[in-house]
Length: 461
Image (cartoon, rainbow, N blue to C red; front, side, top):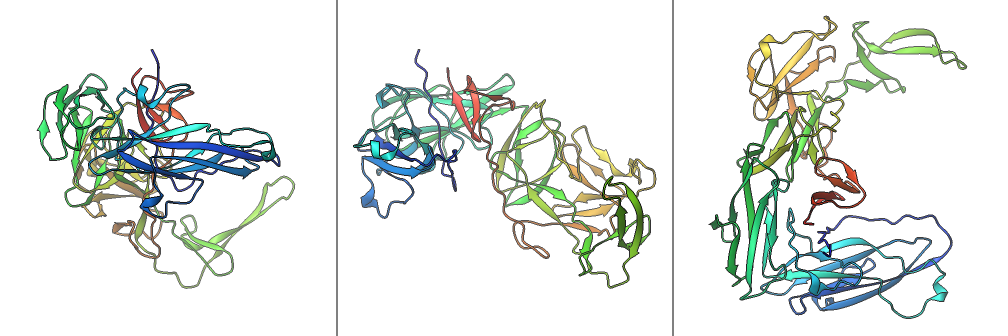
């Protein structure tokens, strides 16, 4: 049986090509086509965007050359005709044609109408030895009346299929949703009108442009309601695929400053004073010869009591405490991850094992002398406390009492300006390569859900 895959490719800011320079020019010949013909148009170039709608066409060939590099970016755009939707890009293997395309696929979000991919190397010979146009690769922009997809946040809970990917009015199509494992079950479809359909598989006649979104439920699926938009403390014994949520972790601001003479001043608990250590070492052995504490007697600046919150990546590690932010209801799928590495420098302690009574915790660190300060989340900030119970699957903040001065309230810094500087908005982490859903890297896609360059792709067989 022939194997072929639909890869959902998305626009990126830049996809640079790197290869060892050899002083040669390389020609690239590529072609893009709309499929089916008449249901949309395409545009392609080596970088320039289409100036107007008149630049689009049913088919377009691209020819360009690059000096010193055997790989280069090809930029492609797709625009559906009225009454149709763009559903993704398809690249055939060997002698396959777009007419061979009958498989189903799933995508986590609406596909972008532009992409940036590596063009194929046509030859490693000098440019002067080439003449004429011979396309090395063809990219098909796929258009359809009806599309299927997974609900946001539930991409790893299962998969969706449609009997005819590129369908049109009066076509008979069947859509089917399949849970990824035991303990997860299909609940319903929601179409573009907001109607719920519980039949699965569901067979119908195409009448208009529509998208059917599959929803699942199960013990490993959590639904969190962020209402109109708020921060929620979160932790769980299993790892989670956070999806499109904004995630944050807290990193304490270093309580140091410069004295204007190149010295970093900090509070040293052993000296109970502000200053810095002047250390002399042997230039040959690097062993310490002497050290002297230089006390700072100038003005101590007023410290901003806010703490940075930084965006974290696509997958959240088990037992780590995080602060999630979103709007409305979101799904989070939990899974066992035996390969996770806990974050460093996180001060958020997750309550994944059960509720935590703060009054029962030790007021000192393991050394028995360093005081610990506990903070609980009040919906906006972390407030210092010695009592209270933190519910399971939430988190609390622990700070070393020797980090002087410590505030009574730790303010969450967001993408808006807080204190001295603005914290950048969350950006998704780009993972390069092919991975299984449990985090193992593989050389080729395997049956089931694969993560290819950071995007989930379902491989049927």
